[in-house]
Picture: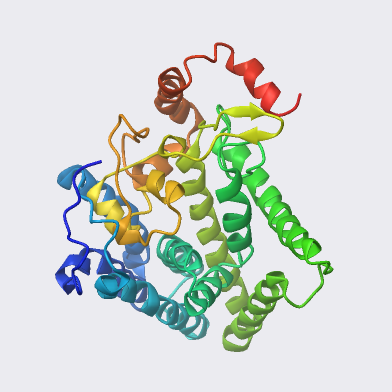
Amino acid sequence: MSDSTLPSDTSRLPLRAALPFWLSLLMIPLVLSGAILGGLWVVVPILATWGVFATLDAALGLDTDNLDPQTKESALYWHRMITLIWPPLQFMMIFGLIWYVPRTEHLNPLEIYFVTIGMGVLSGTIGIVYAHELMHQRNKLERWLGDLLMCMALYGHFRSEHLLVHHRHVGTPRDPVTARYNESFWRFYPRVLRQSLLSSFRAEREMLGRKSLPWWHSSNPFWRYWGLQGAFVVLAFGLGGWLGVLIFVLQALAAIFQLELVNYVEHYGLTRKYLGDGKYEHVKPRHSWNASHKASNWLLINLQRHSDHHYKPDRRFPLLQTYDEDEAPQLPYGYPVMTFFALFPRKWRTMMNPRVKAWREKYYPEIDDWSAYNKARHGV
């Protein structure tokens, strides 16, 4: 890692230090412009989010500077604020448009579809990423805000799956979200949708069981997930009728699709060493793909510094450290480009399989036959 650049006794980082991460707010006028103006404006949010930031990554290069991880939380006021104000802004955007779009006459069905996908880009690329940051905090308000964002994407169980399954079992066969070597995204996607729901519910049920409580106990967060999601669907119907419900569901599906595309990229082909007797080595930076691309880390609040996130899950996003290639495997591009290539299995394997093989040789040279090793890990 590069040297830390901020002393730990700083009282508050200035707004300009956090300002690049506030670029996500530009998504709001872009989506609104698409709904109000129609025409080509309906595709601008999609192109701006992925195309523009991919271009900026190429132009601006990598950011390998690290803040001091011991920086006090009080210094991160402006960084935290963006994640706190986003949930109400997203709520007003989604349900304001659900009210507005069915009442317009200037949008044809195709334009309504693209406006809806733009809403999904907003709630997926930004909303779910911010929810991910919020759900890792101990503060109850932040966790609630994270739940609100995830339930606006009809994916409330993601918090249970992420905290109780993914972080515990990443890089092992027990984690549905770790993409297997040679597994295409189109195989990964239906598998992870099914297995993540089941594994998250099972994890919560087992936690309640250890307290001698049944799964239907009121403390099961699934009641909250289901209640919020149901309330949002009812609200969508009240504001926009059945078209409003369709818009809400389609934007949620678009958000989920983006989430799982990113999940696919983050750990593709990386495995923790099996120690026998059902045990695995501790999670290390080597078990996640790292990306230090500057612009897309602004958009995704350092989510691409994923190696450090799994190594130190409780770090707030400004303090996540980046790693060089000696410490963690590196993606050749940021997430906007990598998720695009993930849609094309042949191109993806050409790009990533040699990198996975090099990773295996570097970190686990003692394993000669990975096919046999993986069978042993899966208990075959």
